[in-house]
Image 1: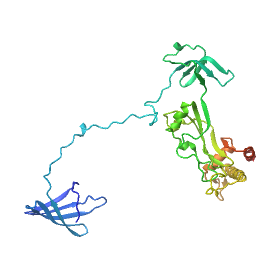
Image 2: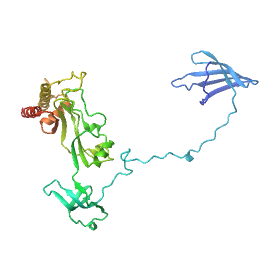
Image 3: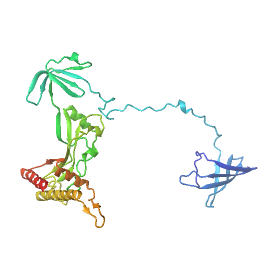
Length: 354
């Protein structure tokens, strides 16, 4: 016996005579185009309908429908009076310590501070600092606040002001993992593609005086991924964090990490496993890059097809290495001992001059 839910409304064809009737309809079962016919009668004593039915495939079945209650039409709902949900406040970024509105640059005058210039002027006592449009506009004694309409004056007596900290080697604000360890040369991968503007560490770094960070790939392979220089702007998008026009960099590494010295017995198969293997990895990689560059500059002529040239297939890995050879991308290298960093500099000089 099967029990069918009767809550689905159906369009039916109904014919009847005396106490007998026929109902025909199309099934609403998902993915079904089945037509069903019900032949039935009404039993007034039991107040039910009963009879036989036939499916599209010709199979017959019996059915019964017992009376439950009289049909009561539901009143129509005035959708215009339904209270529509309202969106909550959007924070920038939309998480803890976010701002309800994007902060706007103010004119701020810091009065009577001890200013560390980090320049030939040294440390300046009882000095004022004026900030306009997000930049330092003046550093002097006794600046007149009345000359700057709408200025916010901050008493910095007994406070110290220094230049913001630039973190040259950081791994914050990167989604997921910063180590692509599956092969020895991964110069095609880019930190720029995984910047996480909602990383709470941006907020924490700013609170400690860090203004800019160089986000690096990890040190698990000789040639890692391309790095990204960012300005710590809390509440901005990933693209808005990136420095425009900044020089390209890439992460290299040497020694224990890249030869997997401390990775355990399950990580002893990827080349290189020794310092001499690390050196050879660089030789192989830059030799391939130099050959790739030559083929781009002097493509092969196709036999019997005048004027047509055969260019090498585009290789993002070798593109990045070629940029290094042409001083368009620079290296930041993780090293352990003097001999290996000397090796890398020597090899690069030789390869660049070839």
